[in-house]
Image 1 (cartoon, one colour):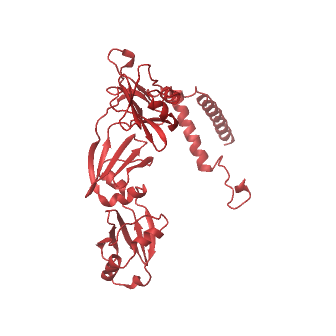
Image 2: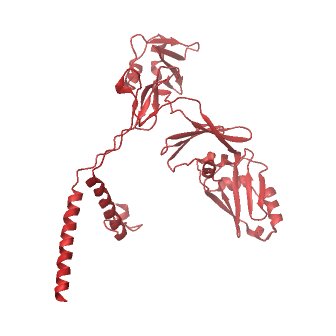
Image 3: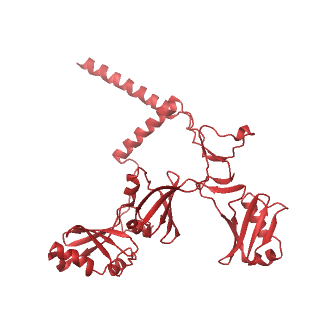
Amino acid sequence: MKTIIKTFLIVLFIAIVIGFLFCVYVLNAPPIAQSKPPKLQVHTRTAIRGRPTTNSKPIVYTKSQYLFDIEKKYLSNLNIGVFSEEMLFSVALGQRAKYSHGLLDKELQDTFNWNKMFQDSLGGIEFRSKTPDVKVLLSGKDWILTDENGAGYTVQRNENELNIYLPNFEDVFNKNKISLSKDLDFSVIEKGKQWLLKDKKFLQTYEIKSDQKKLDILQQSKYPIATLLFKVNAASIDTLSQGSFTSDIYDGFEKKNIPLSKKAKLITTEDKMSWEVIDGRQKYAIRNEDGWLNVRLNLESNWLYVEITDRLKGWIPSKSGFIFYPPDPTLSSRQQLKIKVIGVMDRIKAAFGVFKKPVPPKNSELSNK
Protein backbone atom coordinates (compact mmCIF):
# COMPACT_ATOMS: atom_id res chain seq x y z
CA MET A 1 0.00 0.00 0.00
CA LYS A 2 2.86 2.34 0.90
CA THR A 3 4.49 1.63 -2.44
CA ILE A 4 1.30 2.56 -4.31
CA ILE A 5 0.94 5.84 -2.37
CA LYS A 6 4.61 6.68 -2.92
CA THR A 7 4.33 5.96 -6.65
CA PHE A 8 1.14 8.08 -6.87
CA LEU A 9 2.83 11.04 -5.11
CA ILE A 10 5.86 10.82 -7.40
CA VAL A 11 3.63 10.77 -10.50
CA LEU A 12 1.56 13.67 -9.11
CA PHE A 13 4.74 15.70 -8.39
CA ILE A 14 6.06 15.07 -11.90
CA ALA A 15 2.67 16.07 -13.40
CA ILE A 16 2.66 19.31 -11.36
CA VAL A 17 6.21 20.17 -12.44
CA ILE A 18 5.42 19.44 -16.10
CA GLY A 19 2.19 21.47 -15.85
CA PHE A 20 4.04 24.39 -14.24
CA LEU A 21 6.77 24.36 -16.89
CA PHE A 22 4.12 24.18 -19.63
CA CYS A 23 2.26 27.19 -18.17
CA VAL A 24 5.52 29.13 -17.99
CA TYR A 25 6.18 28.25 -21.62
CA VAL A 26 2.68 29.36 -22.68
CA LEU A 27 2.72 32.59 -20.65
CA ASN A 28 6.05 33.56 -22.20
CA ALA A 29 4.57 33.48 -25.68
CA PRO A 30 5.36 36.56 -27.83
CA PRO A 31 3.19 39.62 -27.04
CA ILE A 32 -0.10 39.75 -28.89
CA ALA A 33 -0.15 42.58 -31.43
CA GLN A 34 -2.91 45.14 -31.02
CA SER A 35 -5.45 45.55 -33.81
CA LYS A 36 -4.74 48.62 -35.91
CA PRO A 37 -7.42 51.33 -35.83
CA PRO A 38 -9.58 51.84 -38.96
CA LYS A 39 -8.66 54.71 -41.25
CA LEU A 40 -10.07 56.69 -44.13
CA GLN A 41 -8.80 55.96 -47.61
CA VAL A 42 -9.48 57.55 -50.97
CA HIS A 43 -10.62 55.31 -53.80
CA THR A 44 -9.30 56.29 -57.23
CA ARG A 45 -9.40 53.89 -60.16
CA THR A 46 -5.94 54.85 -61.35
CA ALA A 47 -4.14 54.50 -58.02
CA ILE A 48 -3.86 50.82 -57.12
CA ARG A 49 -2.77 51.58 -53.55
CA GLY A 50 -5.91 53.61 -53.04
CA ARG A 51 -8.36 50.89 -54.04
CA PRO A 52 -10.60 49.47 -51.35
CA THR A 53 -10.02 45.98 -50.00
CA THR A 54 -12.57 43.36 -49.02
CA ASN A 55 -12.71 44.72 -45.47
CA SER A 56 -13.34 48.34 -46.54
CA LYS A 57 -16.71 49.98 -46.02
CA PRO A 58 -17.83 52.63 -48.56
CA ILE A 59 -18.83 56.08 -47.36
CA VAL A 60 -22.08 57.04 -49.08
CA TYR A 61 -23.86 60.38 -48.92
CA THR A 62 -27.61 60.01 -49.41
CA LYS A 63 -30.75 61.33 -47.78
CA SER A 64 -31.92 59.87 -44.50
CA GLN A 65 -33.85 56.62 -44.97
CA TYR A 66 -37.34 56.35 -43.45
CA LEU A 67 -37.62 53.36 -41.10
CA PHE A 68 -40.94 53.54 -39.20
CA ASP A 69 -43.15 55.88 -37.20
CA ILE A 70 -44.18 55.78 -33.55
CA GLU A 71 -46.78 57.40 -31.31
CA LYS A 72 -46.19 60.92 -30.02
CA LYS A 73 -46.30 59.65 -26.44
CA TYR A 74 -42.57 58.95 -26.78
CA LEU A 75 -42.00 62.70 -26.72
CA SER A 76 -41.68 62.20 -22.96
CA ASN A 77 -38.48 60.20 -23.58
CA LEU A 78 -37.12 62.77 -26.01
CA ASN A 79 -37.85 65.65 -23.64
CA ILE A 80 -35.36 64.34 -21.09
CA GLY A 81 -33.15 62.05 -23.20
CA VAL A 82 -33.99 58.81 -21.32
CA PHE A 83 -35.04 55.77 -23.38
CA SER A 84 -35.65 53.02 -20.84
CA GLU A 85 -38.93 52.41 -19.00
CA GLU A 86 -37.81 54.43 -15.98
CA MET A 87 -39.96 55.35 -12.98
CA LEU A 88 -40.04 59.14 -12.58
CA PHE A 89 -41.79 59.62 -9.23
CA SER A 90 -44.56 58.34 -6.95
CA VAL A 91 -47.73 60.02 -5.65
CA ALA A 92 -49.46 59.02 -2.40
CA LEU A 93 -53.20 58.40 -2.83
CA GLY A 94 -54.15 59.18 0.77
CA GLN A 95 -57.94 59.08 1.21
CA ARG A 96 -58.35 58.33 -2.50
CA ALA A 97 -57.02 54.82 -1.85
CA LYS A 98 -60.53 53.97 -0.57
CA TYR A 99 -62.28 55.24 -3.71
CA SER A 100 -63.98 52.87 -6.12
CA HIS A 101 -62.17 52.15 -9.36
CA GLY A 102 -64.51 54.32 -11.43
CA LEU A 103 -64.28 57.26 -9.02
CA LEU A 104 -60.47 57.04 -8.96
CA ASP A 105 -60.40 57.09 -12.77
CA LYS A 106 -62.45 60.32 -12.69
CA GLU A 107 -60.21 61.87 -9.99
CA LEU A 108 -57.09 61.33 -12.11
CA GLN A 109 -58.75 63.10 -15.02
CA ASP A 110 -60.48 66.00 -13.26
CA THR A 111 -58.87 66.67 -9.86
CA PHE A 112 -55.18 65.74 -9.90
CA ASN A 113 -52.84 68.71 -10.47
CA TRP A 114 -50.44 66.92 -12.79
CA ASN A 115 -48.62 70.13 -13.72
CA LYS A 116 -47.57 70.73 -10.12
CA MET A 117 -46.77 67.05 -9.48
CA PHE A 118 -44.34 66.92 -12.41
CA GLN A 119 -42.84 70.26 -11.45
CA ASP A 120 -42.28 69.12 -7.85
CA SER A 121 -40.82 65.76 -8.89
CA LEU A 122 -37.10 65.04 -8.58
CA GLY A 123 -36.51 65.49 -12.31
CA GLY A 124 -38.60 68.67 -12.56
CA ILE A 125 -40.11 67.56 -15.89
CA GLU A 126 -42.32 70.12 -17.59
CA PHE A 127 -45.87 68.87 -18.10
CA ARG A 128 -47.80 71.21 -20.39
CA SER A 129 -51.53 70.72 -20.17
CA LYS A 130 -54.45 72.57 -18.63
CA THR A 131 -56.71 69.60 -19.26
CA PRO A 132 -54.55 66.43 -19.28
CA ASP A 133 -55.89 63.36 -21.05
CA VAL A 134 -56.08 60.22 -18.93
CA LYS A 135 -56.82 57.01 -20.81
CA VAL A 136 -57.94 54.04 -18.71
CA LEU A 137 -56.14 50.79 -19.51
CA LEU A 138 -57.42 48.87 -16.47
CA SER A 139 -59.95 50.68 -14.28
CA GLY A 140 -58.46 51.66 -10.92
CA LYS A 141 -55.09 50.07 -11.83
CA ASP A 142 -53.40 51.33 -15.03
CA TRP A 143 -53.66 54.54 -17.06
CA ILE A 144 -51.92 56.47 -19.86
CA LEU A 145 -51.41 60.16 -19.04
CA THR A 146 -50.89 62.51 -22.01
CA ASP A 147 -50.16 66.25 -22.11
CA GLU A 148 -51.28 68.72 -24.78
CA ASN A 149 -48.14 68.12 -26.88
CA GLY A 150 -48.73 64.36 -26.99
CA ALA A 151 -46.03 63.30 -24.50
CA GLY A 152 -47.31 60.22 -22.67
CA TYR A 153 -46.58 58.56 -19.33
CA THR A 154 -47.68 55.26 -17.82
CA VAL A 155 -49.45 55.51 -14.44
CA GLN A 156 -49.72 52.35 -12.35
CA ARG A 157 -51.29 51.85 -8.94
CA ASN A 158 -49.22 50.11 -6.28
CA GLU A 159 -51.51 49.69 -3.25
CA ASN A 160 -51.79 53.22 -1.73
CA GLU A 161 -49.66 55.10 -4.25
CA LEU A 162 -49.33 55.82 -7.96
CA ASN A 163 -46.08 55.25 -9.85
CA ILE A 164 -45.43 57.34 -12.96
CA TYR A 165 -43.19 55.76 -15.65
CA LEU A 166 -41.70 56.78 -18.97
CA PRO A 167 -42.69 54.70 -22.02
CA ASN A 168 -40.18 52.08 -23.19
CA PHE A 169 -38.58 53.77 -26.20
CA GLU A 170 -36.06 50.93 -26.67
CA ASP A 171 -38.88 48.41 -27.05
CA VAL A 172 -40.10 50.25 -30.18
CA PHE A 173 -36.74 49.66 -31.86
CA ASN A 174 -36.68 46.01 -30.75
CA LYS A 175 -40.13 45.42 -32.27
CA ASN A 176 -38.78 46.78 -35.56
CA LYS A 177 -35.78 44.41 -35.29
CA ILE A 178 -33.28 47.18 -34.55
CA SER A 179 -31.03 46.89 -31.50
CA LEU A 180 -29.81 49.92 -29.56
CA SER A 181 -26.64 49.72 -27.49
CA LYS A 182 -26.20 51.43 -24.12
CA ASP A 183 -23.61 53.83 -25.58
CA LEU A 184 -26.02 56.46 -26.93
CA ASP A 185 -25.43 60.13 -27.67
CA PHE A 186 -28.63 62.19 -27.75
CA SER A 187 -28.88 65.75 -29.08
CA VAL A 188 -31.70 68.21 -29.80
CA ILE A 189 -31.58 69.77 -33.27
CA GLU A 190 -34.81 71.76 -32.93
CA LYS A 191 -36.68 71.68 -29.63
CA GLY A 192 -39.92 69.74 -29.88
CA LYS A 193 -39.41 68.98 -33.59
CA GLN A 194 -36.13 67.25 -34.44
CA TRP A 195 -33.61 65.09 -32.55
CA LEU A 196 -30.54 62.95 -33.30
CA LEU A 197 -29.79 59.65 -31.59
CA LYS A 198 -26.24 58.37 -32.21
CA ASP A 199 -25.42 54.78 -31.37
CA LYS A 200 -21.65 54.92 -30.83
CA LYS A 201 -21.21 51.15 -30.53
CA PHE A 202 -23.00 50.26 -33.78
CA LEU A 203 -21.96 53.52 -35.55
CA GLN A 204 -25.54 54.36 -36.50
CA THR A 205 -27.34 57.70 -36.34
CA TYR A 206 -31.12 57.95 -36.14
CA GLU A 207 -33.01 61.13 -36.91
CA ILE A 208 -36.37 61.67 -35.18
CA LYS A 209 -38.86 64.17 -36.61
CA SER A 210 -42.18 65.25 -35.16
CA ASP A 211 -45.31 66.08 -37.12
CA GLN A 212 -48.86 66.72 -35.95
CA LYS A 213 -49.81 63.10 -35.29
CA LYS A 214 -46.66 60.97 -34.98
CA LEU A 215 -42.88 60.73 -34.69
CA ASP A 216 -40.96 59.58 -37.76
CA ILE A 217 -37.77 57.54 -37.25
CA LEU A 218 -35.18 57.86 -40.02
CA GLN A 219 -31.74 56.34 -40.34
CA GLN A 220 -28.94 58.56 -41.54
CA SER A 221 -27.05 56.67 -44.19
CA LYS A 222 -24.51 59.47 -44.38
CA TYR A 223 -21.80 60.10 -41.83
CA PRO A 224 -21.95 63.46 -40.07
CA ILE A 225 -20.24 66.18 -42.08
CA ALA A 226 -18.55 68.88 -40.01
CA THR A 227 -19.94 72.03 -41.58
CA LEU A 228 -18.49 74.24 -38.81
CA LEU A 229 -14.74 74.06 -39.37
CA PHE A 230 -13.48 76.69 -36.91
CA LYS A 231 -14.20 80.14 -35.51
CA VAL A 232 -12.12 83.32 -35.16
CA ASN A 233 -12.46 86.56 -33.25
CA ALA A 234 -14.92 89.11 -34.65
CA ALA A 235 -12.07 91.63 -34.79
CA SER A 236 -11.32 90.23 -38.27
CA ILE A 237 -14.49 91.88 -39.68
CA ASP A 238 -12.73 95.11 -40.71
CA THR A 239 -10.05 93.23 -42.69
CA LEU A 240 -12.65 91.02 -44.39
CA SER A 241 -14.71 94.08 -45.31
CA GLN A 242 -11.65 95.36 -47.18
CA GLY A 243 -11.51 92.11 -49.19
CA SER A 244 -8.56 90.47 -47.41
CA PHE A 245 -8.09 87.39 -45.21
CA THR A 246 -6.62 87.71 -41.73
CA SER A 247 -3.80 85.57 -40.38
CA ASP A 248 -6.30 83.91 -37.99
CA ILE A 249 -8.38 82.65 -40.92
CA TYR A 250 -5.31 81.42 -42.80
CA ASP A 251 -4.15 79.60 -39.64
CA GLY A 252 -7.61 78.06 -39.15
CA PHE A 253 -7.59 76.48 -42.62
CA GLU A 254 -3.99 75.37 -42.09
CA LYS A 255 -4.89 73.55 -38.87
CA LYS A 256 -7.72 71.74 -40.68
CA ASN A 257 -5.17 70.45 -43.22
CA ILE A 258 -6.75 72.30 -46.13
CA PRO A 259 -4.82 75.57 -46.48
CA LEU A 260 -6.16 78.34 -48.69
CA SER A 261 -4.37 78.80 -51.99
CA LYS A 262 -3.23 82.15 -53.36
CA LYS A 263 -6.14 82.02 -55.84
CA ALA A 264 -8.81 81.87 -53.10
CA LYS A 265 -11.54 84.49 -53.66
CA LEU A 266 -13.35 86.41 -50.93
CA ILE A 267 -16.85 87.64 -51.84
CA THR A 268 -18.84 89.97 -49.56
CA THR A 269 -22.58 89.28 -49.39
CA GLU A 270 -25.26 91.95 -49.61
CA ASP A 271 -25.67 92.32 -45.85
CA LYS A 272 -21.89 92.94 -45.55
CA MET A 273 -21.83 90.77 -42.42
CA SER A 274 -21.03 87.46 -44.10
CA TRP A 275 -18.63 86.34 -46.82
CA GLU A 276 -18.22 83.52 -49.32
CA VAL A 277 -14.85 81.90 -49.97
CA ILE A 278 -14.19 80.10 -53.26
CA ASP A 279 -10.92 78.20 -53.57
CA GLY A 280 -11.06 76.10 -56.72
CA ARG A 281 -13.80 73.51 -56.13
CA GLN A 282 -13.86 74.21 -52.40
CA LYS A 283 -16.47 76.60 -51.05
CA TYR A 284 -16.79 78.09 -47.58
CA ALA A 285 -18.94 80.65 -45.79
CA ILE A 286 -17.83 83.08 -43.07
CA ARG A 287 -20.68 84.36 -40.90
CA ASN A 288 -20.84 86.73 -37.96
CA GLU A 289 -22.69 84.71 -35.29
CA ASP A 290 -22.89 85.35 -31.54
CA GLY A 291 -19.85 87.61 -31.51
CA TRP A 292 -17.65 85.18 -33.47
CA LEU A 293 -16.81 84.67 -37.12
CA ASN A 294 -17.78 81.05 -37.86
CA VAL A 295 -16.13 79.45 -40.89
CA ARG A 296 -18.39 76.79 -42.39
CA LEU A 297 -17.97 74.26 -45.20
CA ASN A 298 -20.28 74.40 -48.20
CA LEU A 299 -21.62 70.89 -48.90
CA GLU A 300 -21.22 71.47 -52.65
CA SER A 301 -17.44 71.36 -52.20
CA ASN A 302 -15.31 68.69 -53.86
CA TRP A 303 -13.83 67.57 -50.51
CA LEU A 304 -15.84 67.08 -47.32
CA TYR A 305 -14.70 66.74 -43.73
CA VAL A 306 -16.30 63.71 -42.02
CA GLU A 307 -16.27 62.77 -38.34
CA ILE A 308 -17.17 59.08 -38.01
CA THR A 309 -15.64 58.65 -34.54
CA ASP A 310 -13.37 60.76 -32.37
CA ARG A 311 -10.35 58.99 -33.89
CA LEU A 312 -11.70 58.36 -37.38
CA LYS A 313 -12.11 61.71 -39.11
CA GLY A 314 -10.64 63.62 -42.02
CA TRP A 315 -11.11 64.91 -45.56
CA ILE A 316 -12.51 62.68 -48.30
CA PRO A 317 -13.84 63.35 -51.83
CA SER A 318 -17.57 64.04 -51.96
CA LYS A 319 -18.11 61.26 -54.52
CA SER A 320 -15.75 58.53 -53.29
CA GLY A 321 -14.07 57.36 -50.14
CA PHE A 322 -13.76 54.26 -47.95
CA ILE A 323 -13.21 53.28 -44.35
CA PHE A 324 -10.41 50.71 -44.29
CA TYR A 325 -10.64 48.17 -41.47
CA PRO A 326 -7.24 46.44 -41.01
CA PRO A 327 -7.54 42.68 -40.44
CA ASP A 328 -7.04 41.35 -36.90
CA PRO A 329 -3.49 40.09 -36.18
CA THR A 330 -2.92 36.38 -36.86
CA LEU A 331 -2.23 34.51 -33.61
CA SER A 332 -0.09 31.41 -33.26
CA SER A 333 -1.49 28.39 -31.40
CA ARG A 334 0.79 29.28 -28.47
CA GLN A 335 -0.61 32.84 -28.32
CA GLN A 336 -4.20 31.55 -28.53
CA LEU A 337 -3.50 29.20 -25.63
CA LYS A 338 -1.94 32.09 -23.69
CA ILE A 339 -5.20 34.07 -23.99
CA LYS A 340 -7.19 31.09 -22.66
CA VAL A 341 -4.78 30.51 -19.73
CA ILE A 342 -4.89 34.18 -18.72
CA GLY A 343 -8.70 34.08 -18.93
CA VAL A 344 -8.83 31.04 -16.60
CA MET A 345 -6.46 32.76 -14.14
CA ASP A 346 -8.59 35.91 -14.12
CA ARG A 347 -11.75 33.89 -13.40
CA ILE A 348 -10.00 32.11 -10.51
CA LYS A 349 -8.85 35.45 -9.08
CA ALA A 350 -12.36 36.85 -9.35
CA ALA A 351 -13.89 33.77 -7.72
CA PHE A 352 -11.56 33.96 -4.69
CA GLY A 353 -11.43 37.76 -4.53
CA VAL A 354 -7.71 37.87 -5.24
CA PHE A 355 -6.11 41.31 -5.71
CA LYS A 356 -9.35 43.17 -5.00
CA LYS A 357 -8.72 46.72 -3.84
CA PRO A 358 -9.98 47.36 -0.30
CA VAL A 359 -12.97 49.72 -0.18
CA PRO A 360 -12.67 52.27 2.66
CA PRO A 361 -15.73 52.63 4.88
CA LYS A 362 -17.94 55.62 4.20
CA ASN A 363 -17.64 58.72 6.37
CA SER A 364 -14.20 57.62 7.54
CA GLU A 365 -10.91 59.48 7.44
CA LEU A 366 -9.66 57.14 4.71
CA SER A 367 -12.49 58.12 2.33
CA ASN A 368 -11.49 61.77 2.53
CA LYS A 369 -7.85 61.21 1.60
